[in-house]
View 1 (tube, rainbow, N blue to C red):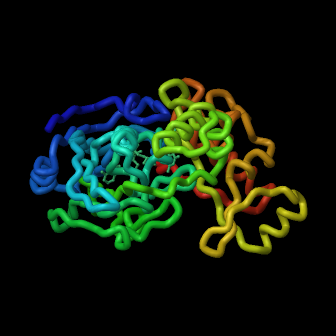
View 2: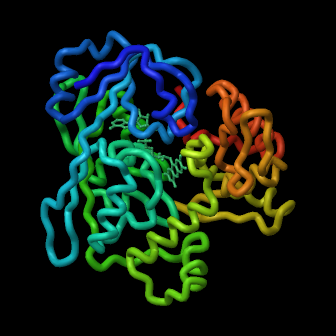
Length: 337
Ligand SMILES: Cc1cc2nc3c(=O)[nH]c(=O)nc-3n(C[C@H](O)[C@H](O)[C@H](O)COP(=O)(O)OP(=O)(O)OC[C@H]3O[C@@H](n4cnc5c(N)ncnc54)[C@H](O)[C@@H]3O)c2cc1C
């Protein structure tokens, strides 16, 4: 365990907000984590687990203790004719796990390439991209129950996954720290090609019978062209979730914009938040240090020296403008601290 005081988080959040944590503790194993929880008064101060800081906006210094899990092993623990169970520690980099599974020709998470962050954070919002979600291949989650000071597991079903949602955002609230995630990866998966421009990009490359690796590489290519690299321009990916709307609201929008894009999911209608922001005149819009990214307006970017408060104010402005135009309230996907 390593303890730092008054620790800068600038390189530990992808918005690169220059805030400090009162205490910052690196935890090197599950056993060390349990030991820490047993010996520390968890109710005395604010505690936050920080992975890659790619889904967080810090609006002020963190008055409390930040825990950062650095254990990052992974191993295949069993297999049958169809699949392999792969176990990964919470501190492992998510994209390293994707690369590993792709190299082993195991399918299930190849479309989730290049999502920043740690494995331990991935189940919290059920990360998703290009038609795939974590829930499609998650087998089990191991977590430390902080009140009972015991490790427990939840099956895929018990995690109650939804769109950018899980039990971890609701019932378990702050009473848990994820320590391991297990996946069931397929030896002969059905590849997901019909989302975004995956298929057309494959065609452009002359690939008619793609492998797991081809699909993952195409997703990497599309993402590199479309999304800002957080190492160059601070951002946290999609700032808002895509909203679900009722039939009446949808019809009103369709009357004005017959070409409105939408998806039907669980009997509900989902409209891309990026489209709503664009049609509100805010694609590529910039106010001093903060703006919407010109290639993907759902991403709010820090052009350099923005504070967390400036970014939050900008996001609230976007939300209000979209509400005024469409009467739809965008919900933020990024966690605001
Ligand atoms: C350029 C870019 C692209 C992105 N693209 C996508 C995308 O395509 N799809 C998508 O779904 N997301 C995307 N994201 C968002 C983000 O990468 C994911 O949500 C990711 O899973 C966050 O991981 P993290 O380790 O950075 O979490 P953090 O930001 O560090 O933490 C997020 C939340 O999880 C909690 N947490 C973290 N680890 C643990 C743990 N072990 N136990 C308990 N709580 C924990 C934190 O306290 C916090 O509340 C993108 C972000 C960026 C910057």
